[in-house]
Length: 345
Image (cartoon, rainbow, N blue to C red; front, side, top):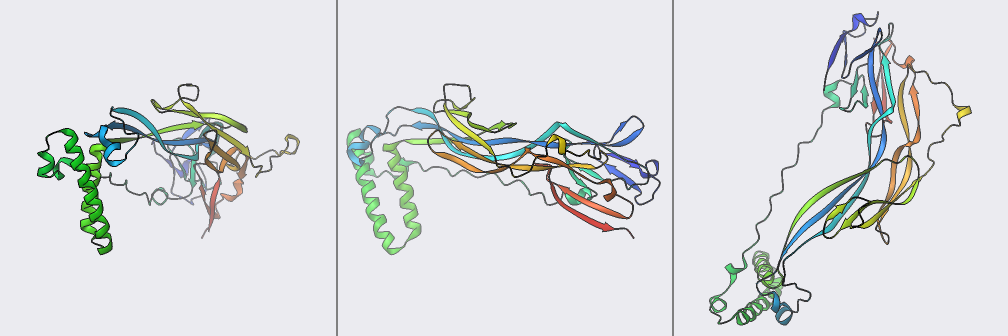
């Protein structure tokens, strides 16, 4: 991000600050100042899906006979399954709400911090303070290695004369393990029980097969300009995963948006002329968002939507030489979070 240091003496007659730091500096004619944007809202769907690779077990055809495991396929398969969907609102720069802050004489020029997209973040807050507290990235999860079922086969099983006989002996061993687990549960011998659980799971997979899952994350964004009801947000296919909302290969998921009228929108005749020298900020409205698969709800909740709100302004008189106003904005909505005043000495 480009950083510009401008000597305050060139911009104002007061000596309240030795310099003014801005993160995006521009000029407009003979004026010096800062250009910033307010955000508009997009609804973001974070869709997690698992790509599953199924490998049949060695004794898959005996799964029903010996372990009463039904619907066990003897053929390998690759398919997708939907894991979760999260819904949230995110802010993106709105080209229609871009403003120029002129650094004029006889005013305290503000120190403004912007996001990388040019959305206003803070005013008169030291950059190091506003950027502090960032959390370190979490360490990647370590995948546990699956046990090899052949490590648990007894000599009798390995010496079996046929595959059918081997499957029968493995099934008996599984039942013996289950009996031992029940006995150990009464004795609360957890370590031995965990070991038997691992053995049972590994040997059962010789009948049921194994499913290796690879999680994928898909992001879908929608820009709401008005209310809508049961519009297709995305489609999901067991063979292809998440597909576009116009791809008929997938099953549709529907989204609805209802304006809760939480902000009173003034009529055109009632709108007052705004002081363009002031700092503009959003007062976002609230909307009810519902996501369904056509039968059941996957999400329902309220989200802030700037398009359903209004724009207000901080009066320029707040930023005078007698006090320092610290302003914190929500870069996601462009709304005010906090305003602090420090009186001048």
